[in-house]
Length: 432
Ligand code: HSE
Image 1: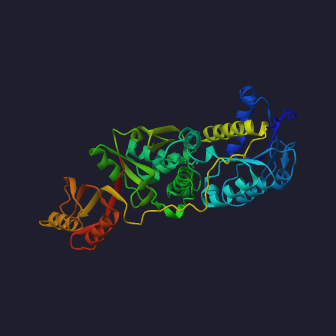
Image 2: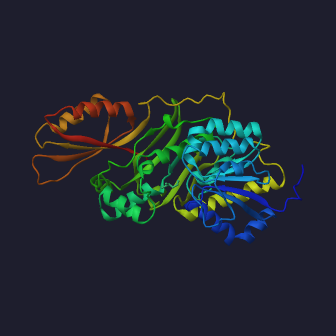
């Protein structure tokens, strides 16, 4: 093994000088001594590429290929986000012999196959800790800490913005729209927060964790996704009575029918650790055969948490660059031929919270429970909300575990009974 003792610095090319990129520079400057102690060589930011000129003209390059083609650059840090040119930057960098750090969950989830095949072929490393869970070292935890174990389940609050919105709705009993405005004012939600609130961001992160855990490419299209945009604060208030909070949960579970993958707002029992995860914090619970439940917790959104994870990746990868060993043993075991069975839609099993809005007259409850019974759905608890409005009542039912297809068929039939149903029935999976 050749130790690169001649190397004075680890030369880094940074592509994307937005919030996280600026945070990376701040941390590298502030923690210079820590970085030096850990690698034995300083990190030198040699070039920065961005669409517009930056406040460091001496480092600025306009074309990212000037970084990729620079023979002195050891490590390319991609922080532009999105699919293109991020994918091109990563692929061309690996092919040019660079190692790569990225925080880009979208590009990893969509091009996992291509990125890790090229990385293996070129014997280069790509680190991506900041792509999932902000500062939480869950990628390292899964690929190194739990390397020996067979993973059964990954469950998590994977999006800081939505968790902030749900915390605000729960705390202040306010509508989704008002809570979204608070999240934007606090700097957590983007001006266009679509990918956060529609669940795609969480699904990208779940796809990454699952692909890593099961050594194959788990695609976003295999995940059943529902966001929080339609969430009514009324359900948050009602579920409190049953000692539940509503959280956006990503869940990947090995079952006898295949891997069951979903992102959806779920009921979480007040006794569970996830119920204490508030605001921009994320949490991931990984369950392994020998390890049992392992819980990761920390800030999932914000400049400093993300930048801190990127700098940790730079440090960890630089240790291998210094010894010329980066990428010799692949970081991600990716076997193209390994086929993973995904559960058929509908075969997923869970307990459900159902809120019916129905007319208040004799026989309505019997009608609902009759249809549920026909689809073999058993009731655990039932509550009819006391209301002065005699035309319309809310009936809340918590079910035993059942197949998703049974719930869907039963609700379709109930909602089609126009003589009793006033508005579409609301359902949530009970996660924990
Ligand atoms: N938009 C993400 C979130 C942060 O709110 O969690 C980066 O992944």
